[in-house]
Amino acid sequence: MLNARYKECGLEQIVQAIENIKNSSFLKGQSKSDFIITFDWLVRPNNFIKVLEGNYNDRGVQGGTTKQDN
Image (cartoon, rainbow, N blue to C red; front, top):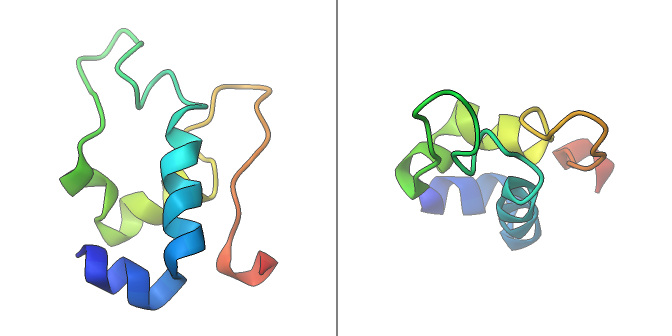
């Protein structure tokens, strides 16, 4: 799945998605739920795009990018 994300988005956007994890208490396991991000979860197509676009960022945190931005 990582190879597919690389072919679709390139290395820069993979790195950006990983950087976006820093902006999300939910993905880091700092919320009321028991969820914490795993690599396998991140590289799934739907999840990757959401993380890349900043959909899980904490409120007030800007960030994220889309393929169209580049």
